[in-house]
Amino acid sequence: MIVLGLETSCDETAAAVVNTDGKVLAHAVLSQIEEHAAFGGIVPEVAARAHLAHLDRLIAKAMQDAGIGFAGLAAVGATAGPGLIGGVLVGVMSAKAISAVHKIPFVAVNHLEGHALTARLTNKVEFPFLLLLVSGGHCQLLAVEGVGRYRRLGTTVDDAAGEAFDKVAKMIGLGYPGGPAIERAALKGDPARFAFTRPMKGKPGCDFSFSGLKTSVRVAAEALPPGSLSEKDVNDLAASFQAATVESIGDRVRRALETFAESYGGRTLVVSGGVAANTALRAELQSRARVAGFEFVAPPLALCTDNAIMIAWAALERLQLGLVDNLDFKARPRWPLDPTAPPARGAGVKA
Ligand code: KG4
Ligand code: ZN
Figure 1: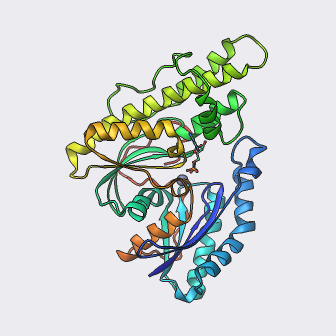
Figure 2: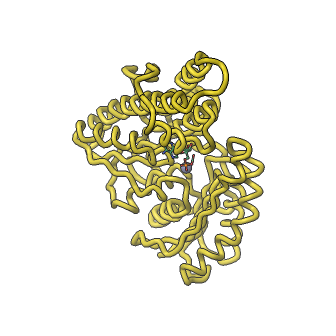
Figure 3: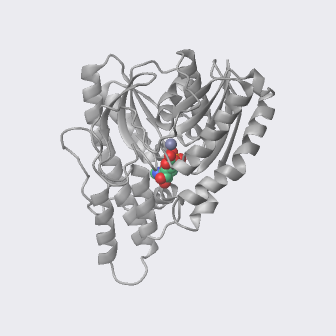
């Protein structure tokens, strides 16, 4: 079976064609980084218009590269949430139109389920497994029990990890997106110069928090001699912030590994989301997994960040279980994978 997947929930417009064996027949991604860089962050209206302008062309290209017609598809899947609703609607409406015209099933995919199931496409990971999802919009630890079956072990009570990287980068004069810029600066900096507290470290549960750390960086930067920060100051702030973030995430993951090991048979830790690109974080996760006797799986970076391959694959997994959706399915700005988990407290928490 072959499925077309569409992704438009944030700042990547993407279309991909994948088959049941996990073979990627075509994929096309268009990043809007340049459109948003001038604003220092993603502007929802700008994102929605860009998706509208480019999605048709990306779909046509993906279908051409895959060498099939719409009639050859077993289904069409699109991210139906959570995300910036204007963009989500563009993908959902396109998928519904293809479904209606070509009489093929429509699958409404939860973007987070796309991230969650990627490791099954790339590494054939079996259920259950522990997932750390760390991106610009999300920061969660989930026990993945099966398709559509998740237990949230922890989430952020304020910012997502990538959001903290982006905000701190902006604060110390590094560009957008901030994660890669902080990582580069941190390589040249002294992680011990600023003794930032490690948020949530040692606290019960597996929740995250980055807002206090962000404030600590601002206070430290403001305490430096007035005028612009020197290159050394920027590098040291970046290195000290990154060290605190990585150690904080490491502590939360350690607790989740313990909880997961007590409740489930699986022994695999999977990471996904753009922050998974961070080498220091990967090393921390690798070592936490090793200590706990877990295998560590990090899909290739292009599949950790937003893409349509993961959406096509999640649609395929759902289709194989008969989980297809009606054309009256409503796009959802919020769509938690574990609806039984209590809502996260902070502002800006997306799911
Ligand atoms: O998954 P993603 O491409 O988009 C969503 O947010 O869904 O993740 C983007 C986030 C941004 O916040 C970016 O700053 C962060 O991932 N990021 C990184 C690195 N590369 C990207 N954060 C830390 N270190 C990196 N090397
Ligand atoms: Zn994402």
